[in-house]
Length: 196
Image (cartoon, rainbow, N blue to C red; front, side, top):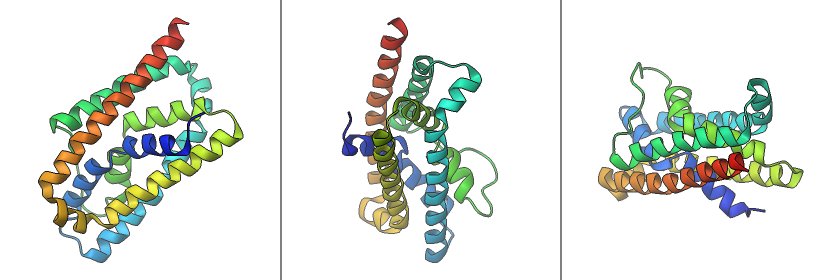
């Protein structure tokens, strides 16, 4: 069984926190510190609700669409790998469109923090963890990861002053490297299960 720390780390990097930070800074650059704090709190609450819903209802989604867990692992792992490549290459960007008004749910919570690859990984983890102890530990790790991402957003201005845009860019690339390894592991597990 995986430890709380390893599950927490997986969830934390799935949310690509430093990419989220750079997008957050871009979208809230004209906002007051009080409004930035409010947006950070709203993003955190939205991400927690969305992530827990995906984690707990993954099995239902698989059964509705007749998907096997291994097929979904291969697909989600491939998508997660593409996300990792875009982070490392520096081509990841927030979705185009209107960013006036409240940006906390769209685009910051979905699809910037909880993008397609994160959704896939959450569904896989939710379907993989069957026992009550696994569910409780994973839910706690997920909540802790969301709190850490929220804390990063609350401290966005301080982090930007300390690291600068270049430092945040480096951390985004490191996140991409870790995500690529996680994606490879998900795909290999799916292939191994599919081939029996």
